Image (cartoon, rainbow, N blue to C red; front, side):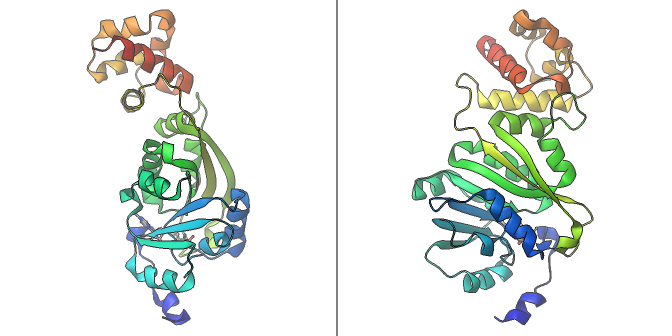
Length: 272
Ligand code: SAM
């Protein structure tokens, strides 16, 4: 396959293919990763390798996960090295724990990801957080702002609560549509979520996630009303919030992550 074939591969909208064509941006992402020779990087959707080529040689191993078979052969030719593994797979189906065990280190996950998969990718990483060190991704600017949002703002929602529960999100820089081919309609943002090495031990993660999803599903209601959708009786809710009953008068966007953790613990103690 020659250079002309690379150009001939028609970007697929269904796979979110907006390829980075500005090398400065790829270099900036690589620089902000502060890579170490011991790192094992998993790159989601390497595409034509714009970011990959800035990472190679700086880390112990790179795993490239690319779903489009048309790009695989090209990536194999470009990055043939014992320190690179190319997987023709859907990232959402990768068992991160298996990869972590194989390399005996937490993964550094990076990617200029397809925007329609932003939430599934982030939620997957949170569910498998114990295998991941950090996640550095290019997303739509508005989504980055929602992920990093603080309580009391209109951007604050499920993504923000999860992001602050599992780690520390940080916006790095914005990227103009002109840096991609084809040009997306939106501005992009590179952001990083550094995952906590341990979570608060007494939190039931599944219950925490259910509570957060349930109350944000009824965003306009106070917690006293939205928590009823958990199918637990009102008395249990009042009992759980007994030492902080004013919490129940609040709407979900007014609660900090610590307050969600508190509620989860108290409800967890009472639930049969
Ligand atoms: N990283 C390249 C760049 O910066 O130019 C490509 C970025 S493009 C926005 C997203 C890439 O993710 C595409 O190459 C696409 O084929 C790939 N992709 C889409 N869905 C995927 C999935 N579920 N798993 C792995 N890769 C996927």
